[in-house]
Amino acid sequence: MSNITGDVLLHFLHSMINIPLVCLSIAQFCESTKQLYKVQTVPQGSCEKEVPSKLSSGLHNISQSFLKTFLLQLLSMELLQKRQHPPTLIKRAFGFGIYKRLLIMWAWALLPICLTIWATAGIWIVYGMSVSNGSVNLTDGFPFISLCGTYPPQSCVFGQVLNVGAMLGVWISVIRFQQIRDYGCHSVLNSVSLAMGLLCALGTSIVGNFQQSNQLETHLAGAFLAFVIGNIYFWMQTVLTYMVKPKHGGCYIGPIRFCLSVACTALIVLMAVFLKLNMKSISAICEWIVAMILFLLYGLFSVDFWHLDGHYFHVKKRTAIPNEVEVSTVTLNI
Image (cartoon, rainbow, N blue to C red; front, side, top):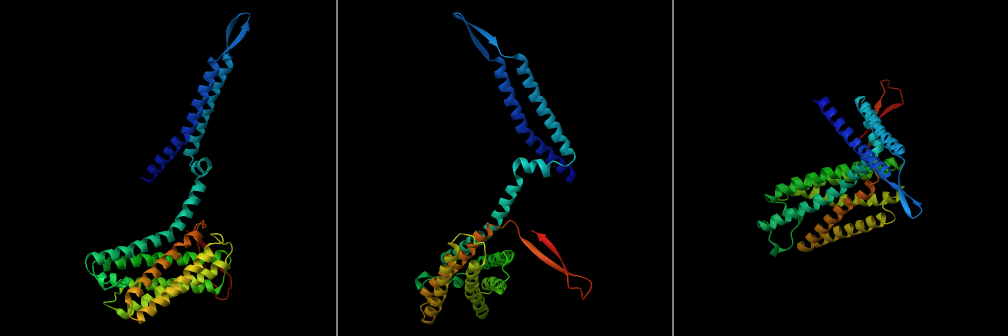
């Protein structure tokens, strides 16, 4: 079945490649026909005599055009039968390598954007569900994010949103860590930032799975990892932005990350202060703004990931000899 599918695909590519050749032949035929029936006027006294163009030259051009097209079609069919056509002519004729590279670059750049859109839309949907079914009373003040996702059915949506967001966060943190290493920065700060990013993702998943009405202590521990450790992670990423060369995003991405990190830190402090003063509504507003800033900071990684052509993991395997120092490296291209 796979051989039949491969043959059908190859014949389809053959027909697609022949279309430009046939169009070229038709255009040359029309041009030669026009030249064939074109007349010249030669003044002869007061009268003009019509003299036909060179008939033999026109017929020669037509026959040469069709012969060239026929030979090219035979050549393309021969290449298809030998399975040599796709890696050569298709890539050169249609620039498949360029489109593949752009597709990979877009795929990596869309990953942080997907996280930002998914998490932002998800928690606001949870907020709307909690308000609509009466689980949250806005007359008592603006609710915390965790309060909106405490009771079913929105608690199910809340947990799923944060679990998917945590998975994307782990993926982004690992890719960013490897990208910085590929740029030649082997600083300990990069390794510590990876650990912080993974802890932030873990805390996000804990917040979604342990509601405050069931496990308050565990829920608060997850919130600490998600907000505080997440803020520290982006402070480290701000420093790494200035350490790594080349700097993507021009001269703006560093100051933007710095300003957002400062705002996030200030709002976390204000959230704790207002909660201590029993001003829960203002503290909840600060929490929502902090969450939006963290999602935005994740989305800014799309500027860095846009320049990724691929992602490489280096797996080191030790040799059978215990005293052998050298290791063999296998590179996997994903």
